[in-house]
Structures are given as C-alpha cells and as structure tokens.
Image (cartoon, rainbow, N blue to C red; front, side, top):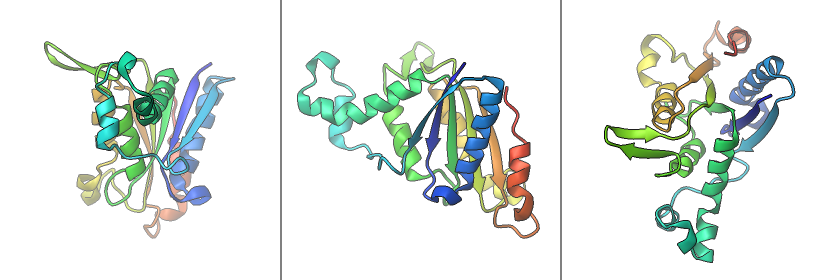
Length: 200
C-alpha cells in the first residue's frame, strides 16, 4: 500500500489533459499497489501564495522563536512540506504553458524548498533530503516537445527532473500527452499517452 500525492496545476478544469493523464497514472499505480491512498492538492483551487519577504524570513527562524504572526506566515509552507514528506509516490500534473510550468507549480516548489528540511549542504555540495520517493510527471502540451525542433523549448520535464533531483527526488518518470493541437496527431495523442504508462 502506498500513499500518493497528486498535484494539479492546470487551469483547464475537467478539460485538462494533464489532469486526465495524472489520474490514469494513479489508476495504474493503484492496480499495482491495491488499497493505496490518494491525497489531491489542486494548486489552482488553493490559490497558492507566492513567496514574499515575510514568508521567506520565517524559513530561517528557529521554530521555538516564531511569533504567532510568523507561524501564520509559514503555515502553508509547512503544510505542503509535510504533505510531500508523507507521500511515497508523487504524481505531478504539469501542462506546458509558454514553454514552462504553471506559476502555481513553481510557487509550490518555492514553498517546499527549505534549507535544513528538504535540502542541506555538505562538504561536497548540496544534499537532497527528500529521498525514497517515486515521482511521475503527467505533462501535456499542444505541440511536440519530446523530439524535433520543439525539444529545445521544453522547460518542463528537464526543469522538474533537475530541481526535484536537487531535493533528493531522483527517481522521476515523465509521461507525455503531446501534440494535442497538431493535425493528424491530436486525435490519438491522449490514447498514446495513456498506453505509454508503465509503473516501476
């Protein structure tokens, strides 16, 4: 049995291909690990706050020195860090918007990036502390970015792989629903994406 955290960052609601692909990934995970639990965090519903100076300041204050206002400022960050640490598997819905991830997903990343908690520094450089997790990325895009001329403009999968790896989540697999706006490709794009899903 696994605990799955499903992150949704699409603003397309029920029409979202990344949400549909993410749910298909979760179904396959549940087939492999029966009775697994799913916790869903829709980053567009919670209107995830971007970091501001007050929140950032609280990241570096010892817990026993936090004021009530500080605790309120750092509350959301603590919540998403705890969700992340509690998960065995993370499924990230990541539509490609303007060549990169939605700003809500970037804001979530900013909140989980906590020195001394999710990463640290050793004699040989950074050390990721969020280990033992499996990450699946459900990426969707109107064009084709896994190959050809579009590949150089894919700042979704390479970015997530690099940064989540920095935090210790090095076991990442991406599945793509791509070409969703490309004639002669879009008709089978979603079917092809779902059929590509293999759970490690």
